[in-house]
Amino acid sequence: MPVGLDPILNHVPAWLMVLFRITGIFVIAPVLGSRTIPPRIKILFAVVLSFCIYPMLLNPGRASAGYVGHVVEHGMSLWSMGGAVAMELLLGIVIGYGASLPIIAMQTAGHIVDQQMGMGIGGIFNPELEDDATVSSQFFFILAMMIFMIIGGHRILLATVIGSYDNVPLGGFRVDGHVLDMIVGMLAAMFDLAIRIAAPLLCIVFLETIAMGFIARTVPQMNILSIGFPLRIMIGIGMLVVSTATIAMAASGSIQGALRQLSRFFGM
Image (cartoon, rainbow, N blue to C red; front, side, top):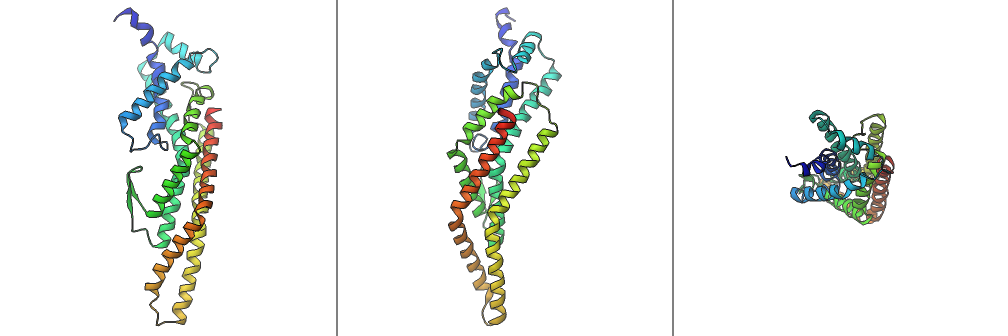
C-alpha cells in the first residue's frame, strides 16, 4: 500500500461513523427518507453531507475532536467499528423516526375518520409508506408533509443532526432511560394528536347516528340505510372542510414541538 494514502485511510473509520449517522435520517425521516427518492440519490446526499461535516469535527473545539483524533491515531478493530457504526445509524434513525411521528399521527387520524364515515373500504396506495391508505388519511398525510416543508422541517432535521455531533460525540450514543422516555413521550403526543383531530368528527358522527336511530323508530317506513350512509359521508366531508384550518394549526404545532424536542435533546 502506498505510504501516501495512509493519512487519508486513517480517517476512514471515523468518517464512516459520520456517514452512518447521517444515513439514518435518509432511512425514515419525512421527505428526506421518502421512498419516492431513488436510493442512489439518497446515498449521494448522505456521502456529500458526510464530506462536508467530517472536517468540522476535526476542530479541537468540537466535542468529537478527541474521539476522532484517537480513532485516526490508533485505528479501530472490526468488532468495535461495527458496533459504533450500528449505534450511529440507530441515532440517525431515532431522530428521523421522532420527526415522522406527527405525520404518522395525522394518517392515523385519517384512518379513524374514514372508518367512522364508512369510507374505509375506499383505500388507495401510498408510495411513501408502501401500504394502502384511505382517502382522508392520504389527505391528512399530504397536508402534514406540506406543513413540514413550509416550516422548514427538513432543514431543522439536518441542523439537528449536525448539532448532535456536539451534544452526542461520535461513539457516545447509548440507548438509556432518557432516550426511551423521550420516545415514549413523543408516542403519547402522537396518539394525542390523532385523537384531537378525529374527535370532533367522531362526535358529529355519534350525534348523527343517534338522530338516525330516532328517525328510524318514529318513521319506520323510511329506509334509514339508504339515507344514513350518504348523510354521514356528507356531514363528515363538510366537517373536514370546515375544520381543515384548525387541523393544519394542530398539526403545525405538533410537528414544530417534535422538531423542537429532538433539537433540544440531540442537537443543542
